[in-house]
Image (cartoon, rainbow, N blue to C red; front, side, top):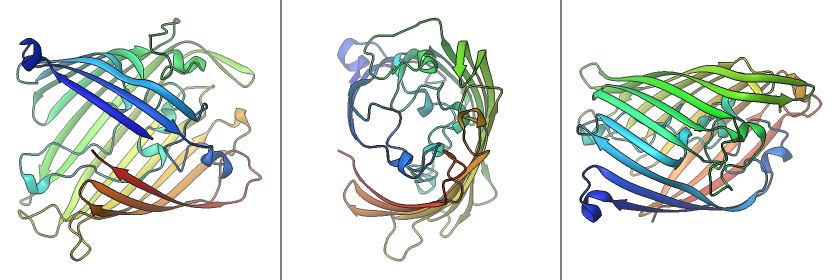
Length: 339
């Protein structure tokens, strides 16, 4: 997967304070790795639905900040799962030693999109046109609202469409969150709750439904610093939960949790290690098992500069695609290069 991003500063180029334009191109070449293991929700987050070879306009949006970023408006083609229900996004802190790039490095799909939103929420790699409004009156509290083209729920690949579809199906989502620093060591934590609705007629195996709604919550907490005030080495935890009223989506309830250790290996200050559980209750109308669990552990190894190698082992005791499929073990490795 190759992602090329271009950002234009509107203040420097056009004299418009607080404005910017972002464009991104995505190239993906993959295969149906999750299908081979019989996994419905995805132990490997890179391959999604077909086509598995694609070149697309991934992002094209205009962003405007108001009142020193207390109000942010983004209009255009975007990736809502980066802004909503994103448990891996850390709390913004003032102290450098508290800063981490992500709460977890898990690579299974549920860490990036709650399975109860699969099939309706635009995101990787099916971005969509819409509007995002983010209000942050204090450094600790925010409220976000988004309204997007919901054609993905009808099976249309919105990521591959350079123009908006707007076929009468719309996806709307709202989220409120609060962050804090706990105790004398200032352990960062956050909690968020959100709700979403998909409009239009939805279809599943032998069933139709007029729209669908759901709720979710997520949170994370740094639980230990090895060297408070010096660096961010220590341990964090997170959790996720979600449910919907859908008769047509692949998952109706979800629970996830995990732990991440940062910089605890001697002489490896940038490395991290983590583990997580993703447990989904599936829609049996598709012939699935009643539930599916993914257990994953990984080691994120810093090689040189902005290059990381991450081997991971995933165990699925009950792959959801078919009740007759035995448990599966998958070993994967991702090489990430930021440039």
